[in-house]
Image 1 (tube, rainbow, N blue to C red):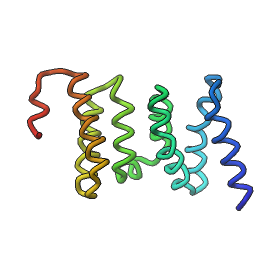
Image 2: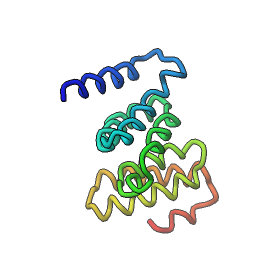
Image 3: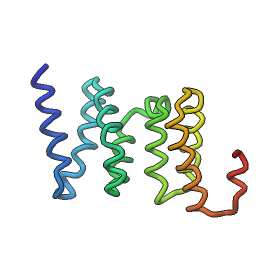
Image 4: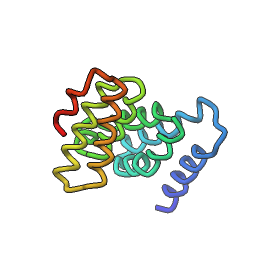
Length: 142
C-alpha cells in the first residue's frame, strides 16, 4: 500500500515543480491513464479535481483537458465537477462547446443543491457567452 502512495507522490510531485519540459508535462495525463488501466480511476479523478484550479490559473487548460479526456466518458458525464472543468478547458478555444458543458454542470450542481458549484458554472456560462458574443439571447434563462 505504501509503495503505491510513494509512486503517486513521486509522479505527482515532480509534475508540479515550476520548470518542466513538454514531455514531462504529459506525465499527469499518463498518471490518469495509468489510474484507469489499473482500476484506480477514483485516484485519477482525485488528482484532477485537486489540481484543476491550479492548472487552470497557470494556463495549462490543454493539459487539464487531456487529463479529463483520459477518463472514461461515462465517468466524466456523471460528475458535475469534471463537466465543469471540461467546459472551462474549452472556454479559450471553443466557447460554444464550453457553454454547453457549463450549462450541463450548472444543471447538475443545481440538482445537487451545490450553491458554490452553481455560481462557478454560471460565471463560466456567462464568460462563454461574452467570448462568443452573439448577443444576449443565450442569457434568457436568467
